[in-house]
Image (cartoon, rainbow over all chains, first blue to last red):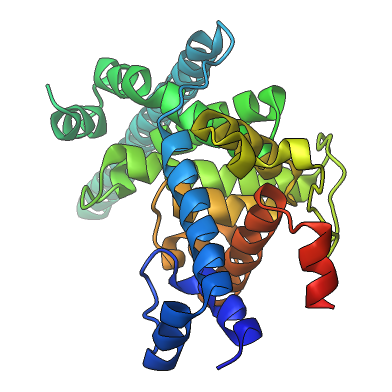
Length: 116
Length: 188
């Protein structure tokens, strides 16, 4: 195995997610240049993990902005829900009125038939 | 209340519980948004959008992951959308194959032997990466998201995510550990 092939594979095996094949491991065991390159990848990976713990403080006001946006969405949702309920109530009332009207008309019709 | 209880309460409509979740996670989510977008203003927009999406989609959160991990995924998705729109993107996108190696010997962190310097230079190197490479390496190597989750949130295949990770790691290493002129000459 040549250094160039090993070099190409190192970024994938540095975190242990992909396993290095035997030929690659043997090459790295005996090649100072590839060992140095692997060590550099490991240093970068370690530094990435360390950066994760670094606090990046947002400018003041972000929390308030997030909460205001969420509250606004919550209010819109509540309003939509209220309107939907009212719409259902109106539709129910109209349907009930229409049904009562129809029933009244049928009753009236029957009485007139009986009277005739 | 722990996070799982807060999520359950928020899902049941308790807005105070959701507020607690925001308070507990927003600096961390902001840090991720900043690392993905590379600037404060876009990061703020991304964070607000991410929490809004989380609030609206809270019922879809299955609870098999941490709330913060779920937020990372939403944030990655929002940042990807923001960067795709590209309206406010202030950094020139570098070509994938453009050389990044800094060959100035005084910038060799090995010579300086200083982990803090290495982290500072890594921050710079991350900012110089093209956003599509930066997103993958930050989500994988800093936030430990699985390849598939990264691919899903960035709208790419898992194979493409792996290719980008490979390129990003290589470019970071080349940037932080530049070859000396002698080594470069030997390589040719």
